[in-house]
Length: 130
Image (cartoon, rainbow, N blue to C red):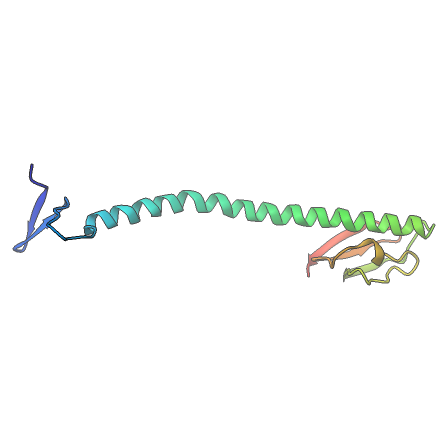
């Protein structure tokens, strides 16, 4: 059975592989099919993973806010105080010595990725990414 052959301007284009002794390689059609399959797979897979990245960042922000609020409550409990000085938009580090009434620094293990504010009752709110 002969392969599918198309004549264009005096040239024969074979869409099936005819190997002669010692000849190696892929036809242009085989390469185009592989590229098309990879394109379809990329079009299906990439949108799924981009959604995961956004969701992961949201969960990281929520978790960090919870950690900072817990650190504030622990600092206020240890200092035996019910109020602290209100603070606006700062990035916290383990060496942060604010609020002065309830030193929050020892309750944090790493620097925060967002800025935080809190009111006099110790309620923490998250600001922009630092």
